Figure 1 (cartoon, each protein chain N blue to C red):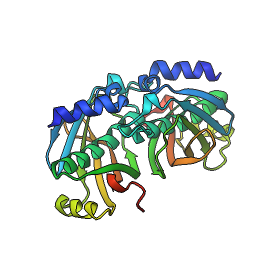
Figure 2 (tube, rainbow over the protein chains, first blue to last red; figure 1 turned 90 degrees about the vertical axis):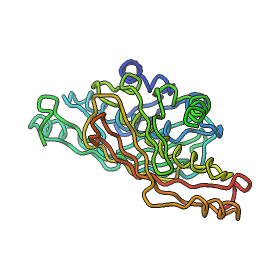
Figure 3 (spheres, rainbow over the protein chains, first blue to last red; figure 1 turned 45 degrees about the vertical axis):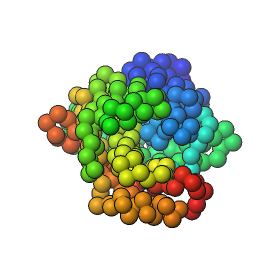
Length: 153
Length: 153
C-alpha cells in the first residue's frame, strides 16, 4: 500500500521525486518518511527550510489521504494553514513524522463527507534526525472536501 | 546582481533549480520571483502547497541576503518561524513577492552585527497569479547571525 501510494506521489507531484521522498512507515495514526540531505541541502550544508517545510506538508497530507483511502472516503484534501518553528539546523538526512493533533474517527469523517460536508483535520509534524532529536515542528490544518461537491463552503 | 545571485541559489540549493526559480525583480524593499506550474504541480493540477511554501521561504531569505550583500553585512540568515494561509488553489505559474513587514535600516543592522548581536527580521510574502490576485500569504521571521560568532544567543 505504501509503495503504490509513494509511486503515485512521485508521479503526480514531481517535487516529491526531486526531494527524494521515501515513505518508510504508515499506520492509521502516523506516517513517517525520509529524504536525503543531498537533494534538500542549502548553501550552509544543512537542510533547506523550504525543503523540510514541503516534506512536512506532504507527510501530513499523505497521512490523511491514506486514511481516506482505507475508509473509502471520496474526497480531496487541501492544506488551509500552518505554523512552523525551526529550532536548529539539521546537517543530516531528514526523517519526518506526521500525526493527528487529536483523534479523528474516519468512519464519522466518511459519513460527513457523504453528506457533502467539509471536514477539518489538524496535524502535528516533526523533523527529526536518526536519533529522534527534533529540529523543526509544524502544526498544519487541512480540509477534506467531497469530490462530488468541490464548491461547497 | 540578480543574475549572479540567482546562479548562486541554483548551484547551492538544488531544490531551487528543481522548482524552476527565476528572480525577476529586486529593490531594497521587495523581491519578486517566478516559477512554472509544471515543476510545482500537484495531483490536482494546481500548485503544490509545499512548493509555494518553499518558494516563499526562499524569496524572503533572498530579500534579506541581498540587502546584507548591498550593505556588506557579514552574516548568515536563517529562518526561525512562519505562518502560512492558503486561500484558494492556483492553476497557473507562480509569482511570489516578498517584502519587509516593517522598515529596517540595514546600516543599523550592520552596526549590530558588527557588535556580534543577532538581528530579527519579519517578512510578508504573497503568492500571486499574473493578474496580482493573492492565493497564499506567509509571515516569516528570520534571524541574521554574525558569521564570526555563530553560537551567540
